[in-house]
Structure formats: structure tokens, C-alpha cells
Amino acid sequence: MKSLSTNDYIQKLEQQNAELKLIVDDQQREIEKIVNGRIYDLEEVIKARDKFYRIIAHELRNPFNGILGLVELLINDFRSYTLEEIESFLKMLYRSSKITYELLISLSEWLNVQNDKMPFKPSRINISPILAEAINSAQLNAHKKNITIHNFIDKDIVAYIDRHMIATVFRNLINNAIKFSDNNGTIEVTALAKNDFIEIVVKDNGIGLHEDALRKIFKQEAIHSTYGTAQEPGTGLGLLLCKEFIEIEGGKIWVESNLGQGSEFKFTLPCHK
Picture 1 (cartoon, rainbow, N blue to C red):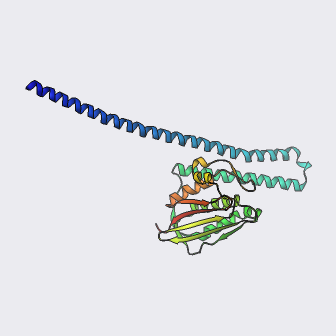
Picture 2 (picture 1 turned 90 degrees about the horizontal axis):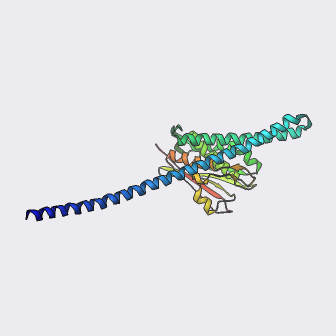
Picture 3 (picture 1 turned 180 degrees about the vertical axis):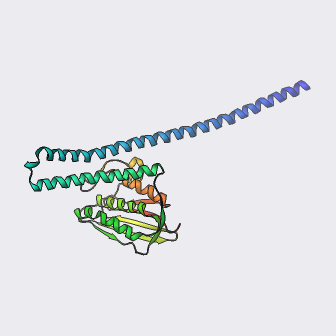
């Protein structure tokens, strides 16, 4: 009887070991699945970052090539050009320099966000004056295409926000609307208070977005060289920066658009701390 009990005990142990092995194997497979998923996600992030940096390098190289070429022309043969031609060269130099500067500013701010070095100092602020400043800074670009920009935000609309971040958001969204609007277009900015948050809409009657662009917008994979209706260069970095800043503020951003029918960029901001 004692021998039989020992055999039963051994069989029971073997059964428990087999069951335990199945559990361990299942857990190991699950861990491997999670690890492989994380590795894949990391590889995709690295690919997106590499693509992002290549595009930024390309976008910086283009205006610098233009600047260097124009300066070389002026240095080598300055006296052969008329004042009108020199003025035209200077305007092109200014335009190329401005594009480069704005891209560097956006890149610097985006990198600060990625490295958690972007200062965030929210307070209760009236939104309308911030928008007015952004519109004023964009007037030159709007004037070139005879685009009208309307600030329909009431002066008493207040949000709990970081002034610099929201100024950047407005500036990028308005410039984006100008870039993808045809001549004689209209841009409208409105705001509606809803309980504890404010919904802001930047609406244009431009060329709109196709479905594939809508799916990818606000993602790193959407970063690529783009051109506006007047061949204005861009990368999509400004929109990515808008998403980062609005999420830091505690809001969200999305876009509604139909190809050929304009776009509505909408985002929310908190009213209170």
C-alpha cells in the first residue's frame, strides 16, 4: 500500500509539473508576444524619426541652396544688375530666410516637447487677443493671395492655457489654412464655450483633404514635403506641433474635411485649472 501511495504521489507531482509547464509556456508566449510587439513599435518609431529627420534636412537644404545661389550671383556680378533686379533678389533672400527660420523654430519647439523640456505656464487668458496677434503676423502671406481672415471669437472668451503654446497653435493653423487656400479665399475662426471647455474652429474654403491624408494627419508618418496652392513649401511639422501643444494643455484636436470643399480644424481647451 505504501508503494502505491508513493506512485500516486509521483503521478500527481508529474501532473502538476505538466500543468505548471503549460502555464509557464503560455505566459512565456504571451511575454514574447508583448516584447515582439514593443520591438515592432520601437522599430516603427525609429523609422518614423529617421524619415522625419531626412525630410527636415531636405527642407532646410532647399532654402539654403536658394540663399547661397542668390548671394553668389550678387557677389560675382553685382554691378551688372539693375536696382529692380537687386530688389527682386533681396525679396527672394528674405523669403528663403523666413522659411528656414520658421522651420528651425518649429523643429526646436517640437524637440523640446519630445525631451520634456518645453516650459508649461498656464493661466486664465482671453483668447481673442492672442488670435488677433497671430492673424496680424500672417497678414503678409494672406495679402499675397487676397485671403480674408475673420476673428469671430468674443473678447470675453477665457481659457486656462499657456499663452506661448496657444499663440503657436493659432499661428500654425492660420498659416496652414492660407497655404492650402486659393486666391480670394476666406478663413474664419470661431469659439464656443461648452461646460468646462472651449471648442475652437479654424475654417477655410480651400482645397480640402482626401481620406488618406485625414487618417495620417497629426502623426509622424504624415511628415513629408508638401506644397500649397501657390507652391508654398511645408512639411506638416506645424500641425504635429499643434497636436503636441494642445494635448499638453489638456485638450484634443481633430479635422473635418472634404476634398475640394475646405477644412475645419477643431480643438478644445480647458476653461479652468
